[in-house]
Image (cartoon, rainbow, N blue to C red):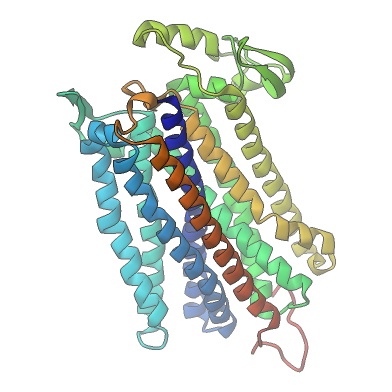
Length: 460
């Protein structure tokens, strides 16, 4: 049974992380396309139309991949996690149904108008369609995160005949966990889109495509990279403070804090011995964890051992500690990627203002590789979010070991994981090939804004 549970978890983790490669970029690019087209409609400058059409092609490839990979997720609830689905279906099904019926239909309908409506509908109607697509992507994220937040902080329910039933829809959509998770996720998506635009634009600049629309794309991406990174850090700080107070075990594991301390140090690095429940080696900054938690150098941060004892008394004998090493290092990789993005955003804008960005070849190359940073941060953040509540699938209500389908077989799981691995590898190859193909269009394409063979300035 343990093998079945672990394989079911691995399958869901693999397919979810792969799907989430596409979600933030869809949300981020849709928003930036709406901004670019707004500028085009207001100024009638053709370079902004070129920008919209270029980034729109990449957006559509990403959107299609996101839809295809997202379909798999909901099937797994019924096939691998049917006990979970029966237990929380009355609650979990509501936001998922709203997401499908409202957000997805808005996205698909108005995306069709946007794709096929060039020169067929008025500029304002065309602009409105991409704004609706952008808003719909965020609405979609809201409802998915509503369901996820219930798993981390159950609210607005009662237990009836062994099932969780909704008692307050208002409580569900005003869940404290949702109110900090949603803005953090949207900011991360905007950050992903910004660094994608910056990285691709940097590649085009390295290929001497310093034309008007490329230059403006780079500038818009750079400004939004800084703004969105600051938003991610700010919203992440609020989310961490919420977790310290409301889901303390998750944050204790993320900090490898085995015993309650006041004030608590922040461990920069640690060698963790989970079997002995201690850190064999660590480098710490005194009082910093308390300051990060309370904006004060005094305040108690609960430790894993004390929380474990509390939960055993509350829920009965068992192991209530998440995987500490995984939580600790995914948190630090996420934060480290965020710090690198902030540094690159500051450097990019600094040299843009000085007018020397084009000559900074090394920095431009770093910007290309920086496309990966939001993806690393997003993946690590979700690994921490989902594994950090172990052993619960719904905290305090249902454990992971009790949520798996009773009839699912080991052979089925192995076969489906292999199938998904092969299928997703093929899809990944197709996606990368299409992305590279259309990115290179900007490297070889004609630019109507070039005059007399001269390149436009990067700062226009």
